[in-house]
Image: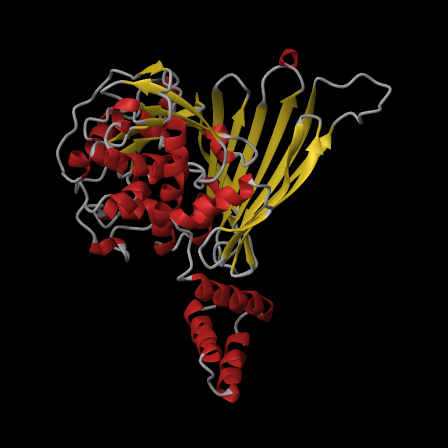
Amino acid sequence: MDPRRLDDLARSMATGMRRRTALIMLMGIAAGSLLGRLSPYLVGRAAAQACSQDIPTAASLQAARTALAGGATDVALSPGGCVRYRRWSTSTPVGAWANRELISYGGQTITEWNHNVVSATPPHSPFPPPPFFFIVSTGTRDGNLDGFAEWQATIQRVIPLSTIAGPLRTAIEITEYDPNSRLPVRRWTKTYPGDGTVHVKLEEGAGSLQVISEYDRLAVVENNEPAPATLNGHGVVAVQATSPVSIPCPAGLETEVRNLLPFAGGNGGGCLHSLGFIAEAAVLAQNSLRNFTLGCAKGSTGWQAQIDTASADDPLRAIELKINLDSWADPSRRETILFHELLHTVFADEHAAPLEGSSKGDDARWREFDRIGSCNSLCYNPNATKCECATCFGKKICDAPCDSLKGCYSTQRGGFCPCKDEARKLPERWYASFTECVTECPKGTKCFGVQCIQEENACK
C-alpha cells in the first residue's frame, strides 16, 4: 500500500471533498490492501494532525510535574492537552507504584506500560515469605498511530525483600518491528545480574532474526560528547584518559537538574517530534518528569555525564544520573547534557560497542557511528552532518533529509572486524579506514576466515 494514497484520502475527507470522489479513492485502495488497516490509519492521521502544533514545552512539563506531585493521575504534557499522561496505582510488598501507565496523543494511545506482580507470598500465608518477588512489565509504542505497536518491550525483575536476598536483577527485551511488513527487524536483550554489569545481545533481520552482537559491559554508560568548539569543527580531538573523580554534589544541584529536565524534555523532545520521532518525543517528555538520583564527579577531562541504563530502560525505577561538575560549569551545555541522557531512556541503542574500545582520536568521526550522539547532535549542533543524520534515522547520507546537511567529517568508509575481542569483551572492532581493517582483521586462530565488513553507507 502506498502511504501517499492514504494521505490523499485523509486530506480529501478532512477538506470536505465530495463523498463520491472519496469513495472511488477508497475502492481503489481496497483493491490492493487490507481494509482492516484503513480505519486506525485514518484515526491516527487525524490525531497526528490535531497534535502537530500542540507538543510538550518546558512550561507545560513543569506544570505536569507539579500536578503529579500533588497526586494527579491524569495530566496534560502539552499546553493544549493533546499529549496526556495517565497512571493507575496499586500496592505491593514494597509499597505503592503505578501498575499501568499510558501516554495519549490526540486521544490515541501512543505508548503504554502494564506492570504486574507475578509471584509473591500473600500477606496472611502460613508459609514464610520468600526473599524476593517478581514484577513483569510489558510496554508498547505506536509511533505512526496505525493501531500496530512497532516497538514492544518486556521487563522481568527479581526484587529482593531484604539485602540478604541479593541485589535487584533485571532482564529487558526490546523488539522493533517494520511498520509496513510488521515483521521484527531488531531485538535488544539486556540482562543485569545486579553486579554493575550487563550482558547485551543484539539480533537483526527481517522476520527471522540473527545474533549480530553479544557482549558484556558496565551498566553505566558515559556521555563523551565533545565541547561546542569541537562539535562545530572538523578537527581532531586529543584523547583525554583522565577520568573524573567522584565527589559529593553541591547544595542546590539536584533542584537545578530537576528544573532543567523539563527544558531538555520540551526543547529536545520538540526537536525529536519535528524529526518524525513522535512516540519517542512523547516518551522523552514524560521521562523528563521521572524521579532521579544524582551523583557528582569533578574532572577537566573525560566524560560529561553518566546514566545507568538499567534505570534508563525501566519506567518503574528512578533514573540514576551522575554529573561531571567541570562540564556542568558551562551553562550552555547543561540542557544538551541532560537531553543526551534522556535519549538513553527512549532508544534501546547502545553507545556503539565496537567503538567503545577503539581510539577516539577523532571524536566527531566516532559520534557519526553512534545513534545517541548523532541524534543529540541533530538537535543541538547547528553544524550536524549528513552522517549523523543517517545514523540517527537509520538512512543513507544521500537520502532526504540528510542530503541537505553538511558533509561528513570523513569521506572514507570505515570497517568492522566481526571477530570478538575477548580481552576487551567487545563483539567486534571498528576501524576508521576500511584498508586498515582489512590489514588487521582477522587476527588469531579464533578469527580464521573472518573478513572485514565495510561501513554500510554506499553514498560516501
